[in-house]
Length: 84
Image (cartoon, rainbow, N blue to C red):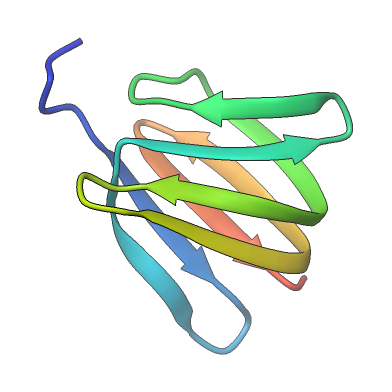
């Protein structure tokens, strides 16, 4: 994996895009336990219920917490639909 490989992350609720940008990783906890998403991750979809979502960029780690959200990854694009 090239060092420059990054994820594109889009976090949105029904009204707006909450945050979008590039990230090194996305981490959270689902019903099966903790997980990390890195570049080149396989297709994945999960429901997250009141769990912190950590988005690690090249300069900082951002934290988000939504009552309910759906997270999916495909082709290095992580999409999080919050408060659905």
